[in-house]
Image 1 (tube, each protein chain N blue to C red):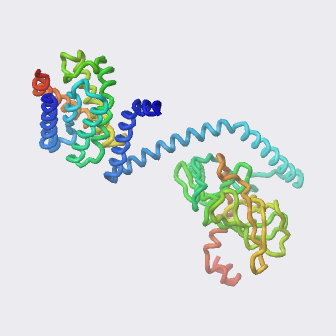
Image 2 (image 1 turned 180 degrees about the vertical axis):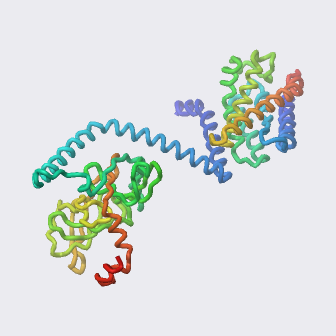
Image 3 (image 1 turned 90 degrees about the horizontal axis):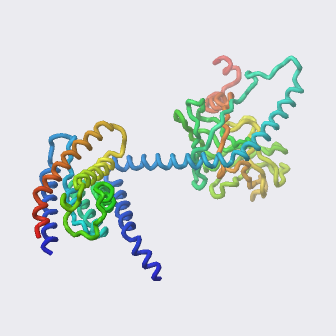
Length: 170
Length: 285
């Protein structure tokens, strides 16, 4: 129960940073960090697929309501939530999801970095793909995707470094 | 029942995922004009691409039938050409200058039959010398429609299955004239009206385009008489016509450009000409 409340608090903090800070960044049109994906990345490993879908839906709907992009965040977040097991399997060669209940860490998952990068890249691809839905201005879209993904990966590691010790505390 | 419950337990999570994803896509598609137009264009692209694949597959499987029909058509045209040649003096050759129509073949990209205004999209456009007003015939030479709009590579034809379609035509045997129109409903039949009560009509008689038709070359067969009845005033026949071309199953078409059609149309749009005395018209020219 305590672990659940800690995870919820973590989600609230991440969403607050995303909504209040990152969504209002006006440095460049190439930068649109989507750091809230860290909430899905750090969802405990034993979480059932249905719960993963519900977490993804809740995240997507919250972000859509705050960003004014009805459906776009849900479109990008739901597949990442639903396919987390295959991503863990193919990107990090981790198959022991059902026997583990803790938060994903470098200690639990051998190729943790592959997992983080795969989750962020897939989410960003879906987000910017659905956002543009065209191959016109491909250079601009690709640069926006690239810059945003790099910044998102950096922010994700920052959140992981700050919150993982607290979430994994027993 | 147990099996059903077991099956539902197995599939409910993917189903929930798909339902939520589709709902999100629908919400997103209506959220802004940009996303709406982009999704529409992606949808059109996918529909066009898949439709093209089906058309190609169908064309492939119809090759044998098309080949047989083409052979028959070649034989018929050869016979007709020989008949013309036999009537000409030996030193005269039939050249291009005697050709009154230009023929282009095309494939049907899409076709509707269940609307009041039905149109056919053809894979030939301005770059293939297609232009507005050209007749569209079936491979057998039966009336199908006429071109109403062209882009660089495609053209749209108004099908004879169109409630605004109304052309002068005549009975092939009797030469009595009337009008063919389609009032919706069956894609196989139309109405042939205003036929003189003195006409000799029987079931199975063919109805063809008249010599000065704007839409089709003279003699193009439109359909055959299926039934007829006298109108209430007992002055005219109204016939039910069965179209010669099966519009619902048409894959290939022949586009025909009549050289004199533009001149006829131009004349029809000159309102003053018909009221001017002949000598004044000659002076104006």
